[in-house]
Image (cartoon, rainbow, N blue to C red; front, side, top):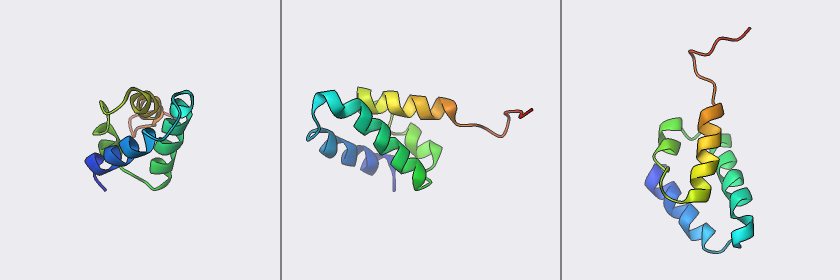
Length: 72
């Protein structure tokens, strides 16, 4: 799956979601994508589609550990 297709799916779904529920829905959507091992580069390609989605993506992308992180 590519970022354009995943962004289109979000746009279709978000039109049906009440404004008050969009932040939670965006987080659940991103978590589901992570559960299916969607690559970080694909997630990054979705930034800029929607403010709710951006917030959810930024939260996840900032928290993703990298190989450079040192664990004590």
